[in-house]
Length: 70
Image (cartoon, rainbow, N blue to C red; front, side, top):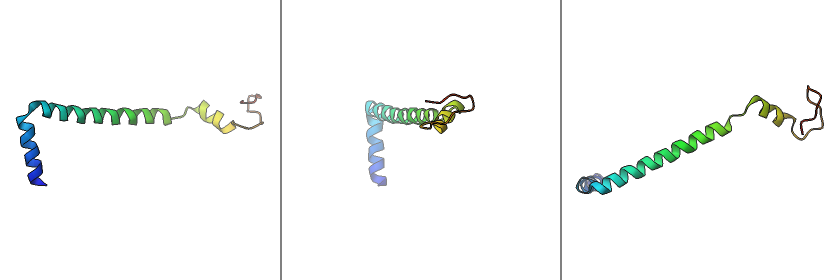
């Protein structure tokens, strides 16, 4: 394994375009993962109003304000 890594390192040192391509792909993968994790965090948070509507969803009961939440 160490021999393969040394060979890959030597290839990257000789070919600067390949090195830039590898760095770009790694950066792109990192940014994609970062963006999807941020999107998941922001969409999984509920506001108080959304949680209240979720609680009263599909019921015929009246909410505290006296109106149905449909």
